[in-house]
Image 1 (cartoon, protein in one colour):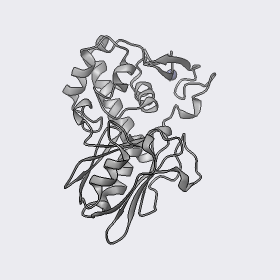
Image 2 (image 1 turned 45 degrees about the horizontal axis):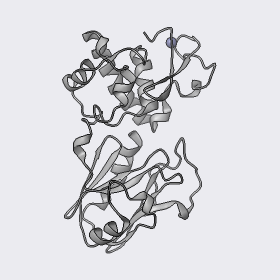
Image 3 (image 1 turned 180 degrees about the vertical axis):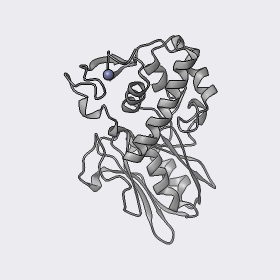
Length: 256
Ligand SMILES: [Zn+2]
């Protein structure tokens, strides 16, 4: 999600431009009932009005439909042929135009392109924004506490659920729980008020620190994410468990 926020910022110069041509070569990349034919039909001539982001979903408001862009783990945006992030943790550093899945060209020049080697992202017209919870960068503490206190699911599963809080992925949640000193499989509704406060602060800190460092793969735990890896703060051997369906690294010594 931190990566997507940097993509959104990179896309801000598109505001005010009018689409001249649509590059939509890949039917697989059109999602949620949208077809490549629709993309080509309805987007030509529209003016980009604003860029927004909810969680991992980037939105381009236009004077026509809202265009929803998802990048998966390997997609990158190029605006006027420049990429805000050159390398992604799970992606290739090579630049192959065969990976260009969706793009727009604008009257008067310039372009936007999604380059995605593994095709894990997608494009959708008028995506259902109501299916996403409040974005993690703006969720208030009462909203956050409400989301957690209502569920006996593991904290990690709850934080990964984009309908509850939007934007937190696997690495970010492991970093947040590491900072908060909370075990990923603790039932969400077992947290005390103090623990909820600690967790909320850890989330804020994690988002700002990793955002500054350049992405969700820059957490302190990152280099220890292997079997036998050790806790950077107390040296205990990390545990590797599947929680919320995702591989989770956590410290049994200080995460309770
Ligand atoms: Zn530890």
